[in-house]
Amino acid sequence: MGYFLTEEELELENTVRKFFSEQISSEYLRERINNKIRNDTRLWKKIDELGVLEIFGADPDCRPSFQGLSAIAYQAGRALFPECIAEIILAGPYLASKTGGGDSVLRDDILAGRQKVVPLVLSASRTDLEIKESKNGTAKISGEAKYVAAVETGDILLIVSKDGLFLVGSYKNDESVQVSACGSLDLTSALSNLAFSETVAHKLEGITPQEFTAFYRIIKSAEISGAASRAVEMTVEYTKERKQFGVPVGGFQAVQHGASEMYLKTEALTALTDFAAWAVDSSTEQLSLASSAAITLAVRYGPSVVEKAIQLHGGIGFTWEFDLHLYLRRVWDIAMRFKPDHSHASELLESARKAVAINEF
Image (cartoon, rainbow, N blue to C red):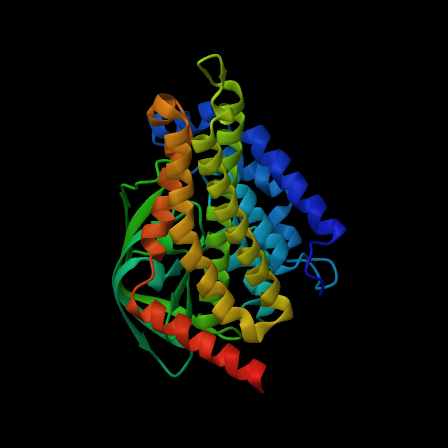
């Protein structure tokens, strides 16, 4: 598979970008924030009509590659899209297209986007869950999971633990699952806390938790990359128009150096994320290292780029009415959940050692 997007994937990305620009405005985001809208059913109806979920559940010869999904996440970051569209595609149609078995009717509904699957990746949430597996492919889950996104949107919950992937169907109608809203640094997205009490789940075969976690990291890296890219564009546009001492502030060397640094960081992050997305289908031996490196760079560069954008905007950058603080909230929210710890650093080093060993061989 080629490194660059195909013509069909480029058309898909352009369609999604146009859709986001038409549907998501500063006024719309503030309406959601002020009215505490956690799930916009009208927006999801338009997404379903667009067929974005369904296309990832199509036949292998017709559906986009993982790079196409990463491109959607990138555009979601650029637009501050308030719904977890890339994550729901990943956990739903994309994953279902790669795994077989189970309830064929449910699988067809997921592939067609009629049933939406919300991922709960334990490594990216504050959790205290106990999973007791049975020999018949089921498990019972107890405990709490905090800061889970898109709970109001989904129909099925995909729990990704180090021991496997588990599906909880119709969790919103399950008395053993208690859902409560919680606050978020990112005001444009809705997070929830979940409490499980001997909740029955079904183990999903065909993909390892390490693989799914790698996919998820790439998606979130792409989202940060898109947000950072938009912050760079907003800064360049502003410094061309804003004048000081009768000339545009973009002509001052200090501003130029700051903007150049932002651009270099964003391009480096985008390139690494694109490579990781390419590795999913074309170089699986490099996937672990590439995805770990991408999210590590994303949580480091993303916040710094948007913070510099706010600084270069001067006083207006700090105001509530200007959108940059919403971008900062988005990238920091992701960064806090994916900030590498000692175990992640060990994983990254081990992946690097394996990559070196493969190349030496």
